[in-house]
Amino acid sequence: MRMISFAAVISFVLLLSGCEEEVVQSKGISSMKKQIIFFSDGEHYQDEIAYYDALIDLKRKYPDDFRDMLIMTPKDRQTQVSVKDYPTLVIMYHQKVVLKVNGDRSKKEIVRHVSKTLDKIK
Image (cartoon, rainbow, N blue to C red; front, side, top):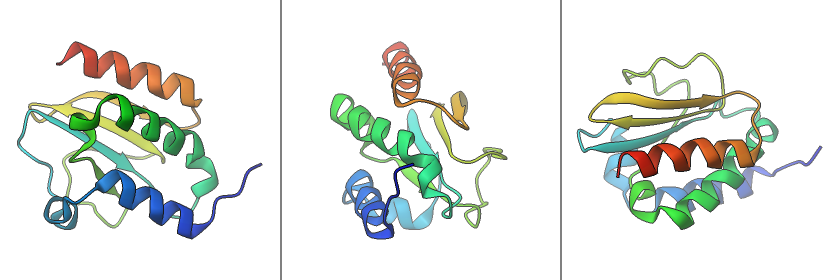
């Protein structure tokens, strides 16, 4: 099993969050049309590797959609999205959940589901 260092995870989080400090710090779900949220338990990074790899590919393909992506942990519970399993990737459209991918998934499967959803709501 591949191990991922804490520094690598932090670098990944910074890469995906870009320069949108205000949005990420407030942890508020935007009222904009699309919102992508990645929920991490912050402890089991090795279980999230497929998600990290998929998110990197998806950000390249859909840079505008991932510009304001939020990354949330269990202590960020002020969201209307119910998450019981980690990792979980959620896409909201007009403040409704249109996709929720969670648990043990392959990178290919995550990319396929997210791409299909984003293409559908463009």
